[in-house]
Amino acid sequence: MTTKEALFKYILRIGDTNLILGQRLSEWTGHGPFLEEDLALTNITLDITGAAKSLLEYAALVEGNGRTEDDLAFLRNDRQFFNVQITELPNGDYARTIARQVLVDCFDFYFYQELSKSKDETLAGIAQKSLKEVTYHLRHTSAWLERFGDGTEESHNKVQLALNELWQYTNELFEMNEVDEILIKEGIAVDLNVVKTKWEKHISDLVEKSTLIIPQNVFMQTGSRKGIHTEHLAFILAEMQALPRMYPDAKW
Amino acid sequence: MEINKFEDVFEGKLAKNEMIEPKDWMPENYRKHLIRQISQHAHSEIIGMLPEGNWITRAPSLRAKVVLLAKVQDEGGHGLYLYTAAETLGVTRDELLNNLHTGKAKYSSIFNYPTLTWADIGAVGWLVDGAAIMNQVMLQRSSYGPYSRAMVRICKEESFHQRQGYEIMTHLAFGTNDQKEMAQDALNRWWYPTMMMFGPPDSESPNSENAVKWRIKRETNDQLRQRFVDQTVRQVEYLGLTVPDAHLKWNEAKNGYDFTEPNWVEFKNIISGNGPCNKERLAARNKAHDEGKWVREAAQVFAKKRSEVYEAA
Image (cartoon, rainbow over all chains, first blue to last red; front, side, top):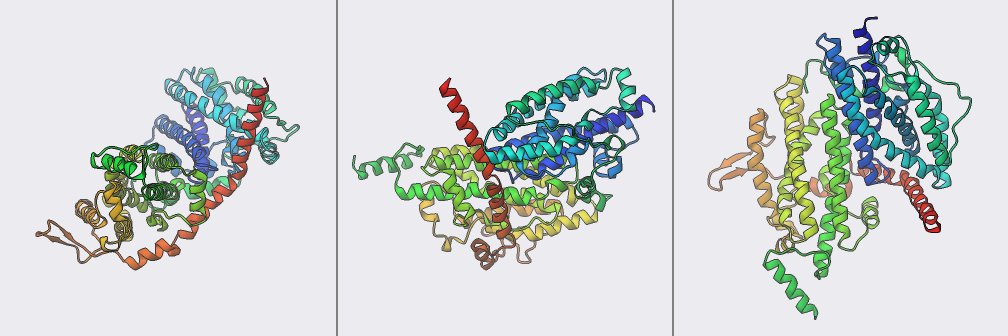
């Protein structure tokens, strides 16, 4: 694998993770638990989808064969997507959406901190912008985790159940392969072991503060680095890609 | 002061084009009219999020997705300012939402039509927001301060939405044959419902007279409808599309178009709950509200716990 090929795959991984998470979160717009929170979650969705757009634009540029960010988003099939599986899971109730979001926000927070030091200036630039946004997202979703954990018995149970069921998807965030190996040597990619240590400490403190428990001895799911997904992704793509696939000659 | 004197002050302010503010005395029917109008407007914004939100997950480009998300979020924001403006008149948001959820309150009947294709998202932005602006521009100068100020911001955002809607239509109308067909079909379906947005003909509009007197409304339904048609026909022509009205004709004498009135029987039916999406829209609002109940409760209980800890410290 050349450095260029590795870089392309690396950007897709980050871009797809943002794209699919944004796609899932956007299902909440207009259906939130109350108006202010509907607006707040939509803000987060906008930031994440905006980041996906910038990343896929850059991936297309790096690939250099004339594809655009829209071609990458709308004309690849599920086995060519590299988003982590946790992003494609159904939203579930608001506790599950928040639990997933806090886990991913916290990852992004430390990931973008590291990536903003990348020798690749475009990636560093995108990371710096996203870091500002994610700092805000993490504050928002952490506050909700705490409210749910230490709110009512119902909210506590719902959010604990969400953590229990989502935990098996968390290890994927930190998996590294040949792509990482090549790009870490070049000073482009992030060492995810560094991110993992910080993430574990942060999440552990937050979960404890929220009177919740981190599930133990969980068997971890894997696959997305190879383009293997849950059953949900193909449905997401069927919906998201319908128009560009139905009208291949059209420009929107 | 006696009621008469209060009323003189109120009438004096209206006469001098001054704003009425929340703490000022106001006649009870003025207050009631405003609560009804502002809350209906707020409900329309919130319900309006549904037909447009319907296409967020299927927007055909990343740019289109971000623009539509931001647009639907703006509509929610408008709902928020308007509920807040209504609250200054002495009602709570809970009461207003309850009226919406139980079907007691009305909202703009346009949102009971379905958005069937991506072109509908263009048509809603262009025509529906266009008509809304025409209705709302005059409200920026309405006599009630909080409403008037909310409308200044809302109108700015709505004109942006209208341009975005027209941009979608432009891409379609100048795109492939399929896209052009999609655009014409959307125009065919949204033309008459949009004209209904100005309300029944003046001869049958019970709420207009006071509204004009109180500067809550400044032009009549028929005047606005005429202006909308005159303005929009040119935009349709630019797109190379056809207004779905065989009787549309320029009338030199009145310096405007003659046109076919929308079907007022359909309008009455949709207002009374028989439109294609009335039940779905209300059901979606009720579902979101009911499923959000435990979230709101958790937030309240948590806040109470924390304030007790704070007070004890």
